Length: 101
Image 1 (cartoon, rainbow, N blue to C red):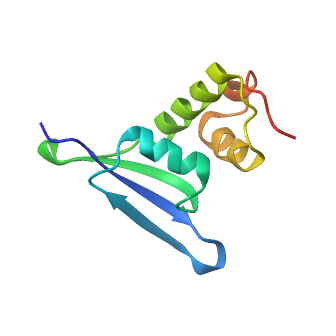
Image 2: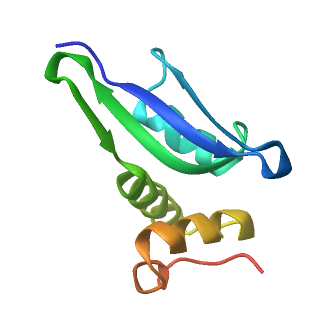
């Protein structure tokens, strides 16, 4: 069974939006890109499973992975990331996180 391929929809403000992806990315890499902002402001994460002919929106799952990571490490969540987590998990789900000012 081949590994899934991940795609990010990124918002670049006035420059517009685009999708980027790579067969070498792992789910962990994708979460790291969202946290770092390296690929831009991520608004959606898609997972393509070629053998199943399936494309799934896993944005909420990635948001939960990120929230779990920050909760476990008790690290403050950067302000820019707070909006992503609130948008995809809701304020109630993120209330136990340490939020950076």
